[in-house]
Length: 101
Image (tube, rainbow, N blue to C red; front, side, top):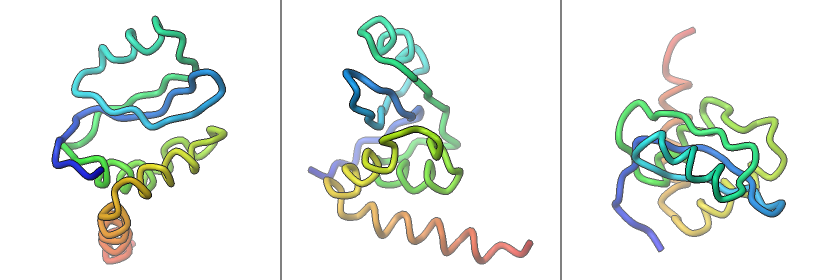
């Protein structure tokens, strides 16, 4: 179910005990998610418009959601639904390693 749609805001929220990655183009999405009963809503603005696979790679590269139970499973679900996510993620890791410390 790959798509070329891009988003400028992404993050994590939990609804009924299930943690998912959320995608949006406006930070006002926080209010909507909270109003609809989501807990632990944490959205961040992205450095540029990105596709879902690119977002997963970016969020993992900055350790976003590292302390959130269920975050890794949510990332894995996106990777499963978007096979090109693995390629995007490896590109981010390679770029990060190429930068001298």
